[in-house]
Image (cartoon, rainbow, N blue to C red; front, side, top):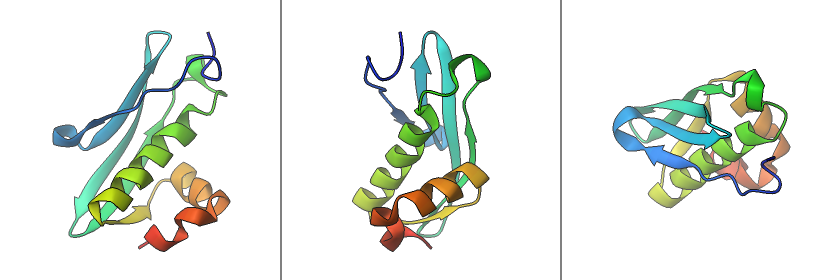
Length: 96
């Protein structure tokens, strides 16, 4: 089953400073650190078994949407999140 036919549900695990999803029994995650009023995205990881389905994009979007709702700035320290931010200028006002 692909992510396109089944919506990707992303959970925010605040205590562990990460966003996670599980697809076909495989977990993908985005890790972050809070530094003052900045959400610093440190890692986005999607195992190869579920890669190529846009899952990382869902994780990064969830982090940016959370930051927007919480009044935070985002610093994409991982290369994927930085590239995602460049492709989504509608989120540029959130960049730290």
